Length: 234
Image (cartoon, rainbow, N blue to C red; front, side):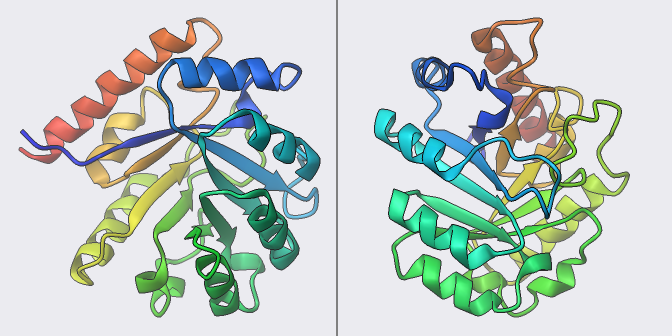
């Protein structure tokens, strides 16, 4: 049976930040080809896990695809910097964007995939005119940058929002992928995949669960992904 392709994108901010090169090499060894990198400016969100120079150094040590998620007030500055570094996908937030089309074209003309990121409460209606231009829509399922609050759960409407976006993409006959970020845990993965998620940003509640090894957590993720896909085709 042919299932949809699901990408696991390990979030580098959940890795060992004191030993980034070692962490990246471990991810490569486990067969991951995509690295989710958050760019946070300290204004859009209170945390600032990685600086631009750190990402430059990471680019030198790995051929993994860099899936960049910009959480910033000045999108154009960070987009330009990521273009210089040489990344494979850039997602920026619609909530801080005045010139959405300009940013989309800027990214695309440099041969980079483009994504638009939405905060949990942002309506899908903001995508009415730009969805056909997007390779990916990134849905935040918790408030951006507050992942350190371990008590924060996914918003109650997380699954419905993924389902609604999946339907919207199908109605328009597009192949835009759905990326989900925020408490993508062993508990929530089957439902998210079943709802239509294609890219899972893996963090502290799945791939980087400290109680198990990276290999064990990857195996668990794959099991829950298959569970979601199996239910989807019934």
